Each structure stands twice: as structure tokens, then as C-alpha cells.
Image (cartoon, rainbow, N blue to C red; front, side, top):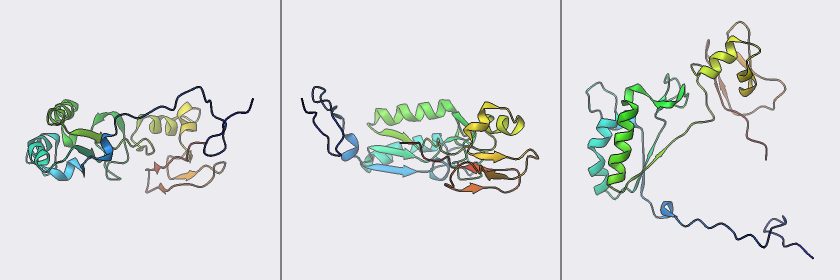
Length: 185
């Protein structure tokens, strides 16, 4: 019996149906990408927030927006425009509370607007607990999770010599933001 071959010559299982993506909403979506911090300030502190964004949902809906793509909103010390995430389970306090974020997503859903967030899993702030633990303890399991050699003096970081060069490493005194290598295929 001969096996069927896929488009790249790989063997396929002919008895298993190809999974179909039935919800292709993104193909016809009007996606509005924005930074919460620069969009609308509701509390007058000079930084946009979720309350301000909620005030403009009707406006965005009126423009025909069907999805809002938020630039990073997770907690961050803000050294790399929010891409240096220090807490993946919370929103940056400058933008409001986690409750404000949930309220915003519900308000968007009521208007038929989807919410997409930039989930920045390839950056880690030096304020993230894993990074702090890796820097503190040379035997920490998190040390292997960061593709950098963390110096014992707590100073600059350098790429691990056993890894191929990739991405960039920002290393002003005491700070490092690391792009991890691509996952093996």
C-alpha cells in the first residue's frame, strides 16, 4: 500500500480529515491597532488608560472597527515601550486595573468588537521574578530559561557562548532585555 504525500512530500494520513477553520472573522475585519497609553486619558494624569479607551468605543464602532489590537498592556517598567514584561498576569497600573481591562473587553464585546493583545512572550524584563531569581542564584532552574550568561557581579549580561547569536541584547547598567532563540522545528 502506498502512502499519500502532502504538498511538501510528507506522508499524510488519508483517513483523517483536514481540520477546517470555520471562523475566518479576521479575513474581513477592520483592525485598529493602538497603544492604550497614548490613546485617551480619562483620569488626567497624562497617560491613556482603559477608562479613556472605553469612552471612545462608540466612536471606534462608528468607524466600522471590528477588532482592536492593543500594544503591550502587561505590567512593565517601561524601558522598552512595554515590551519588557515584568508580570504577565496583570496590566500596567498606568493603564488602570485588571478590572478596568475586563470591563473594557466586555464593553467591546457588547459592540461586536474583538480585542487582540500583544502577548510578548519573547521578552523578559529584568524586573520579572524569573530574571531576578536567575540573577540571584547560579543554580536556579530559571537560569537555563534565559539565553544569556548572567554575570555574578550583577552587571552587564552577555550572550551565552554555547548558543548561536540571535536577536538583540540591550544592556545598559544592570538591565537586560533578551530575545530568545527561535524554537527548534
